[in-house]
Every structure is written in C-alpha cells, then in structure tokens.
View 1 (tube, rainbow, N blue to C red):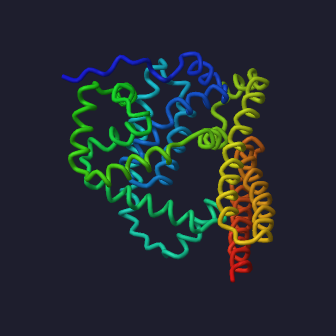
View 2 (tube, one colour):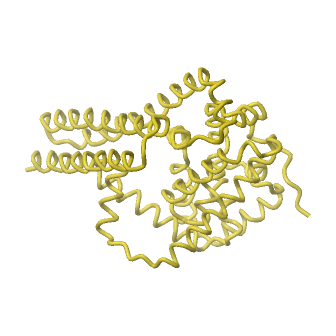
View 3 (spheres, rainbow, N blue to C red):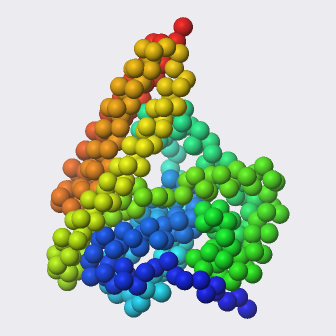
Amino acid sequence: MNTANPTTSPVAPADFLAAQRGDRNAFARLVLATQKTVATIALAVTRDVQLSEDIAQNTYVKAWQRLASMQNPESLLPWLRQVTRNEAIDHLRRRRHQEVALDTEDSRIAGAAATGPDPEAWMQDRQRSEQLARALDAVPDDSREVLLLFYREGQSSQQVASLLGLSDGAVRKRLQRAREGLQSELLAQVADVARHSAPGLAFAALVVGSLGPRDAAAATAATATAGKWALGAVGTVLAALAVVVGAVVIDVRRAMRRARSPSERTALLRHGIVYAAVMASFVGMLFWSKHGDWSQARLLGVSAGYSLVIIGLGIARARIHRRHRP
C-alpha cells in the first residue's frame, strides 16, 4: 500500500487563511507554491504547454471562488489536482466532440500574435511542443505527471511524491516505466521542454489579475485588507513586468548578435524598445482589467488592438532584416 510522502505541504496555512478572507496577495503566494504541480497535471493530459496553462488558470479561478468553503490548508492541493485533471479531460472531450477544423495558417498567426514579434522563435516553441506531445505518447498514462514534475522540481522524487500525494517508491517505479518507454534523445527533449516551459512569476500575476469578486462577505473582507493587497499587487505586477521585459531584452540581444551592420543593430534596438513598452503595457492591462470593472467586450477589444500592434511589430522586424540583407 502506498503512503504519501510526509514532506511539508507547499501550502502555507497563514496564506491559506488570509486568501480565504479575500487577500489576493496571499492567494498569489498560493499560486506560486502550487502552479508547477497544477500546470504539469494539465500538461500530462493535454500534451500542449499553452493549453495546460489556460487550464491551470481556470482551475485557480475556480479555487478562488471555492476557497472560503474549504476546511483546512491540507485540502487545497488535493482539490487543485483533482479539478485540474477533470478540467483537462473535459476540455479534450469537448474538443473531440466539437470536431472544429481550424485553419492552420490562422492558428499560426494567432500564436505569433500571442507570443511576440519573432515568428521564427514561435515556430521553434511550437515544434518543441509537438515533439513533447509525440514523446509523451510513449509514456504510460500514470507516469506522465511524475516524469514532467520530476524535471520541473529539480529531479527530486521525494518532492514529486509530496506534491502528487504518492509514496517515494511509487514515484520511482513510475519514473522507471517512463524512462523505459523513451529513447535517451526523447527523454532529454522531455526534460528540456518540461524545465523551460514551467510557469513562473508572470503566470501567477496573470492568474491573480484574472480573478473576479467572490461573494459579498469575501468582498467585505477584501476591503479590510485593501492596503496590503495594493502593496502586494504592485510588487507582483513589477515582477511580471520584469520577466516580460527581461525576455524581450534577451530576444533583442540575440537578434542584434545576428545583425550584419551597425544600422541594422540600431534599427533592432529601437524596435526592441517599442516592443518592450508594448508588452509591458499589455501585462499591466491584463492585470488591472478585472479590478477596473472592465466589460468583456472592452477587454476583448483592447486585447484585439494589442494583437494587431504585435503583429505589426512582427512585420516591421521582418522588414528590418530584409532591408539590411544583401
């Protein structure tokens, strides 16, 4: 009989109780403590990184609504695990039943708009995601969560056991079965994608930014802690902005190293500054839209506007490269 590993729960009781009272800053810490587990469970079912994060976000929104009815901190992580699995399975069922034929080119354009002005980088990410899906096909169903979380949690079987409610022995057996089904090259690909696609600060910021109000009692409690939340929210937003702008800086530096002339480097630098400003404002808009009582129509309209701007930046960057090539 398997006994769950006694490692300390990642859910801090103080944060759990504060979040129950409506403290969103405390809830953000709960998200940070559990997001790798939640997103990994969704990824094991869907085999799609972006979709797994969407499902994880939906799970946290449900948790925010249900948190006040939970009895103790120890019940949160098992609840998150089960709801995530159900959400992911239900999504796949709906997708199969709908049998919607999406146009491939439109899908690629939408993906490029969502991820930035570098279509080449987006295509590389998409290829890695497809490679991950193919590799996971060779892994037994009950071993996928364990394998992915193992690489996202620093290759600690005891940590994985604690997060998934399993014994260390059960985790090791499932890891062995997963490795037996994969060639060494595919296993290395799974490890690489799992580590580099793990959710971080930006994901937690977007989750908290998407939260709506709970009931009247929770709203009253939230008002009582508004000052603390405001300070915490600012910190979370700044962290998310740092992640986004940092990613832009890395991307721009990489592009500038490939530049063939000083004028091309200058053009890429100017383009990068504009892109960083657009992405920073986009993150801020997403985070605060719910707190500004935005209607869904307004949010969709503004998001569509940002998408057009990002597509335009992608076209502009491609033109820079073409203009400076012999």
